Length: 468
Image (cartoon, rainbow, N blue to C red; front, side, top):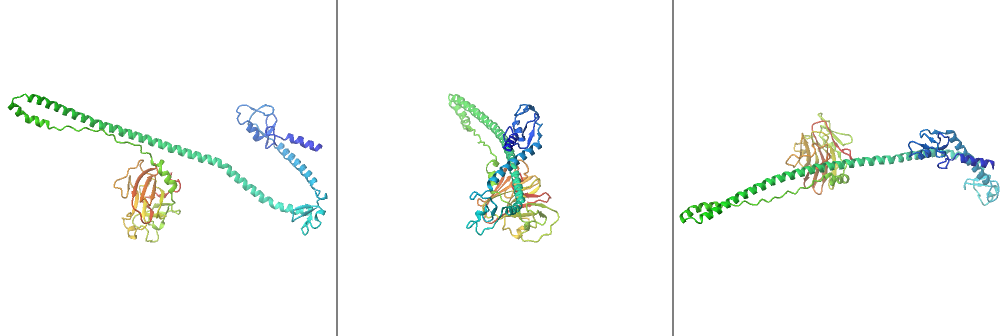
């Protein structure tokens, strides 16, 4: 009983006054009281200048927490004593067979049960491997030791997984923050676009008001002049009507000639209907990118000998030195062109190409049915639908004029092919604006088309959002 009382008293001493549980990572504060490190830190979490002891209210410095390793070891010993004593009690109570009240001295390997000698009498455990408790315990201790290292490894692996998962909330916050900043940037671009659009529309409206005002003033002047003419004719008619016959008839010709002057027509002031050209990127383009993006790679067997295709088939650049390459029939030999995979037989497909500050290039789609001769002549773009840059100008095969771009040279071009609709559209991915759309009828397979100008800067096919 004395040992029991001592253990109870010891247990009371190793309890944390805050959580009332066993002290974990015990620390001692200035006044000498002991707490779990996490408990006292949480207790002081919202305090700034004054940190009272939760027991005696003595003011302390928050940083003055001394780890009490000796107390920690005493707590471990106290727990071990309690566990050992509890086990001893259970063991003493479990040494006797509940059925026969005999000492348990045997162990059945088949049924994994501890037995007394009476338990082994037939028919119970007949034919089973039964051995003394000491021998069986030694055998199973050896077996248990073989489980220790694998279990330790499993525990370590699970700890790693827990550590990895513990980082996920931070990664989630970072992703949310990145997306938040991206959305703020999009809204800022939208705001700037709307401000520019508003300024342009109001300026056009003011200019139209001036132009129409001038026309109205001219129209009023014309009516005023005509009114003066009519008044003159009225006076002439009155005066002439009372003249003698010969004098009246001599003036009548002039009256009739003046009366034939036509009345000016009324000017109708009609304002042109203005509207906000809401930017395309905030409607269809983002949906197109997400839904129809396709993975494009280059076909080295079509590449002109002066073109070098990267190992991952995502990048191509021009070199002055011709490469020693096999003479495939589908290879371009005059224009520095390379085609891409896959073939397009149907459906909708979107891809992006990073052009950077390259001065000369062209991208688009090309009919796969190009003959060997057409690939080896300057007219190799026959059967192609492409958007190109040459120097500071931009154009499209089939477009009769140079195409204006809203923000100068694009650094990346988006290509959207709608096979069934017979449309190939190009987008400036720098400001996500629509550039040009070809319309045609497609009845043969199409392939991505890349013309690489004679400088060393590459064209690169974008993957995911790496061109943004």
